[in-house]
Amino acid sequence: MSKMKAEEGLFQVIFNTLPLPLFRVTREVEVLDLNSAARKIFQASPSQALKRRGGDVMHCINALSVSSGCGHAKPCVDCRIRNSVREVFETGREVSRLRCQAEILAGDQQVSLDLLITVTPIHFAGENSALLYIEDITELVTLRATIPICSSCKKIRDDKELWSSVESYFNRFLGVDFTHGLCPDCARFLYPEIMKN
Image (tube, rainbow, N blue to C red; front, side, top):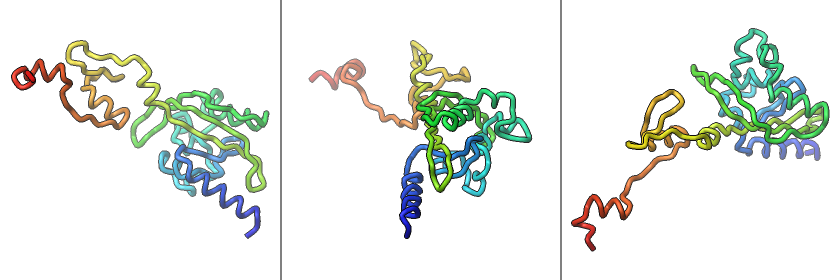
């Protein structure tokens, strides 16, 4: 095996092991490769993604709004992902952890995501390309925002004006499950006979 083939093999192993969605793209954000995490999150096999533009693969609402796809809708002019990739090709410098919002279609629902993107230049397999890392920080942004909570029953109001228990709210946004118990103060208040000692 040649040294170049060994390096390409190592690159593919590392590329597919990383847990964040990762794309190798051209200047026009055409997908040259995507890792396992990107395939899983965006439900796209290599045959469905390769040689297509990133917004098409990620099911961007703007890309879906025009028949010509990613890069051709009016909002695409201001796309932070597209512009960051172009900047990397023009300057050769990394764009690191730039925050942006994306509207995508997930199944049959439109979802708003807060993303951190990093784009770095790479020369691989004889061509200049860029690595595009995508970090979904939607949960973090949601939790850092002020959470409206009822001062009496402690239910939390979501962005759809629905009230739900603290447990179900955190389960939905973080996948956290709760177990219940009693703190010593509540145990003494609720069960004074048992808690005398």
